[in-house]
Image 1 (cartoon, rainbow, N blue to C red):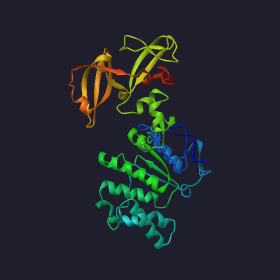
Image 2 (cartoon, rainbow, N blue to C red):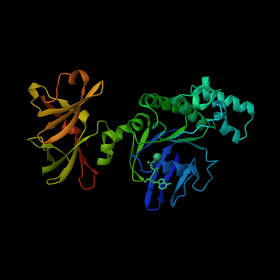
Image 3 (cartoon, rainbow, N blue to C red):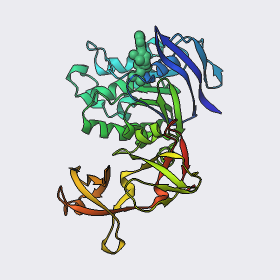
Image 4 (cartoon, helix red, strand yellow):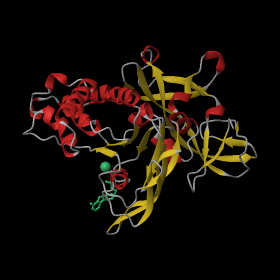
Length: 359
Ligand code: ADP
Ligand code: MG
């Protein structure tokens, strides 16, 4: 049975349609990520699940119960916001104890529970201090501690890493995965960052303008994106798109190739948008011939370098390991190749996946 069922939520603010049929299910114990750009409806969705939004339409079921009309308390749901506010005048210990005080547990139980959570989040050394004397990462850990101290069944996380610096974000991604494993709690995590969604999510729901447009494992979404929006949203650097035509059934002509390539399922005359991932373009060696291309930009990232190439009039990105990329300079002529089975085909008018060479 699925733990959380979000069904067809609709919410407008004046003329803005914030949620437009938002639907998805999260399984018991799952780490589910909602991935969408700013203003796509992530926060409104989480607030609706917490019971903080007036919905015009739709329902939320949790742990087998319809909670659409239930009070915020008593849902067994806890939420961590993008800007985490700790009580500045209270010690870390008192901040962590606060949610338990409201639920009326005994002082000794509270002390024990706070100790366990502090241990789990590695903030035991800060318990007597005020939040303002803590580093950003420690403050965030305390905020997480406060959200989980009451043992919620579902933890909602709204861009909890967006305001942290890059190094801390990397560390905290690992922390969230560890916490999820150790607590066995169901987690729903909203983020605009595909790296966060792909590295942490068991499954990812991609949202656009208030609704889910694709759901799948990170592997599914990367390997077989259902439309150009998902294809462009997932994968770094982003997928290359080129327009193409089908000169005959089962074949497409790409702008940078003399010969058509095989494209099973494509019919003659069909216009297409073709996607080719930067990681699926490789250097061709001398004997293979390959497609002539000119390097017009390099972006070294340390272990790999993103290479911008131009082949005929088409600009594309490819990725090379740093030691290989180091042999080349801007302006160099190279030859590249790709496996036609890695091409993704989309309908240019709807953006929907049209056919796939490998399927
Ligand atoms: P996200 O969290 O993905 O950035 P939100 O759920 O915050 O998106 O917002 C979705 C849309 O609803 C946006 O266009 C936003 O401007 C609008 N919106 C959200 N909250 C309010 C509000 N309280 N008043 C008016 N518009 C709002
Ligand atoms: Mg938001």
